[in-house]
Image (cartoon, rainbow, N blue to C red; front, side, top):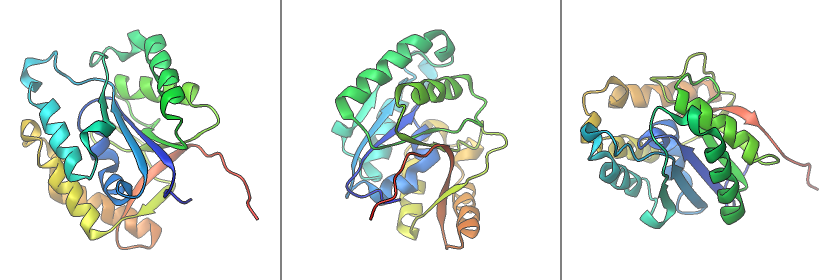
Length: 210
């Protein structure tokens, strides 16, 4: 699968999800690919998370994503299941406006109610389009990557540096740089490459070309 020249949509429920799930891949392709990063909630209704919006923008900048390619949606954290229809309609509008060739979103193995709901609605809204699921280690159980993408040492370091922008989450174990690197080393071993980011396959749509 060739990512270059494609329109690639990254979907996350909350600030930090896209970076945690596929930050190295995003850094790898951002300069050569038309990417759009959409996060459905900005978490600003929680006063303890007042800085995460700014931290997200700084983090994405390190990954090579300009602010005009970042969208923060209007949905409320932890109650996505109550907004299924609104999320579906939001995605249908997004499909019409951006028309992606490839989508990355949360794994179906993710037990967080917001993550699970948005993936279900993404699969409905983006029928006929390839959808791959990324792992957010704190809430994915039973995740195993069947789609592996080689990344470079530079990509891995960019992901680690991007996550370091989240001062709000500096003490969370899943922001640990050694853990971040070890996951990509393991996925690299599965791919027989030095480093890789792994995804599960939610839907592949393709054709044999001469």
